[in-house]
Picture 1: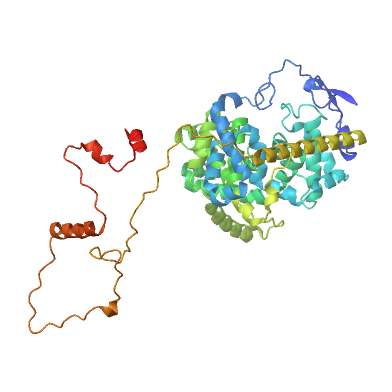
Picture 2: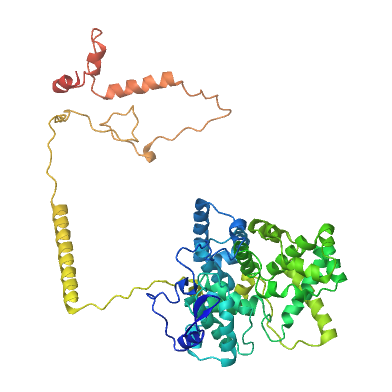
Length: 549
C-alpha cells in the first residue's frame, strides 16, 4: 500500500518481508524498485560517479582524486594478475599488495578485491548453498521488525537505496536477516546495516553476506554483540594511543572528562562510512580490509590530532559541549582523500602496539568490572593473517563465471546435421591425407647436366703402389727382408767414436729423391723453351688441355 511521506510517494515496508520470505523478486522490466522516480526524483536528477543523488556526499567531488585513464588501466591489469594468482602474491609479495591497496583499488575490481582480501571468497566456496538456505528461512520476527525500520536510513540518497522497497533495500534485508540466522547469539545491531550497505554497492547479496561475516568475526569481533563491551575496550585503547601520538589532545580530553565512547562509537562501528566523504571512505576501506583494524585506529587518531592538536584550536572549545561539537563537524580539508591517505600511512601505530595495549586495558577492565560477558573470538589483523589462519584450497580462489549461457539440448535433426558435418570433414581429411601421400611417393624427374665433365682415362703402365714400410732405396721387385735375417750389429769396443749428427735436410732429401728416380721409370725432362703454362699442362691429355685453356 502506498503512502505519502515528506511529500514523496513511498511503498509500505511490509512488502519487503513478504517478497523476501517467499523468495519472489519483482520483474526487472518494471520501474518499481529500480527507478527512484517513485520517491520524487525525476530523470533529470544529477548523480555523482559513486551513485549519490543531489550531492548527499557534499565533499565527494571536491576531495576525490581523478586518476588518469591510462594509469587506471595499468592498475587494473596489475590487479587482475594479482587476483588470478592470489595465493602466490599474498604468500611472497604481501608488501606489494599493501602498497597497491594504499594507492587505491580500481573501481571496476573493488568488489572482487574486497571479497578476496576479507576471506569472503574462501568462506563462500567452503559453504556452498548456505546463504540460500538462510534466505529461505523465515527468521526471528523480533529482529525482522528492527531491520525493516532501519532500511530507509541507510544512504537514502544513493540510487541503490533511494526506493523504499526497491532492489537495494530488499537485498539489504536479505543480508541482515541471514546474519541473524547465522549468528543467533549476536542477533542484529544497527551499525551492521551501513556495513552491509557499503558491501552491497560493490557486490551481489551472497558475496556481501560473507563479507559482513568476515568483518564481524575477524576484523571487528564483538563490536555488534550485546553490551558493546568490545567497542568500549577499543575506546580505551584509542585513548591510550592518543597519549603517545597527540599528547595535547589527550590532556584536553582528560581534563574535560570526555569519554572515548562519546565520539568514537560511530567512527569504529560503521568503519567511518557515515563520517568521511565517499572517496575517502573507499580508500579507508581498501586499506582496512588489507591491514585490519589498525587502519581504523589510525583514522581516528588523525582526526583527533587535526581537530585538537594545536593550542589555537583548543581555545575555541573551552568545555565538553564545545569539544563534542568540534568533533562532530570536522573540517573538510582534513577529510580529503589524498590528505587522509598520506596521514594514515604516517601514523606510528602497528598491530603489535594495539595488541599490547589491548592486554593492558583488558587487565584494567577485569580489575574494575570483572570478566567480559561476551567472549568474542580473537581479532585478526589483516588479510594475510586471515589467510594463514583459515586453510583454503586452490580452487576456492578461482573466479567463477558471472554469466552462464544455457544451451538448449540438440534436436534429432540437429544431431543428424552435426553427424553429417563430422562425416564430411573426416572424409575430406582422409582425401587430403591420401593426396599428400601420393605426392610424396612420386620421385622427382632427373635433370641432365648440359655441360658434362669428361672422364679421365686410366693411366697405362703405372707402377704398383709401394708399401709404406718399404725403404725408398729398395726396388719394388725386391722383397723385403724379415727382421730375423738381418746381419747382427757389431758391438762397439772401447770408447765409441763420436757419431756424426744427422745430415741436413738439404743433403738427405736429394739422395732420397735420387734413389726414387732410379727405381721409377724416368720421364724425359722438359726443355728449356717450354713455357710455364706448358709445364703445368704437360701431364694433361689433349681434351683436358683444351678444357683447361
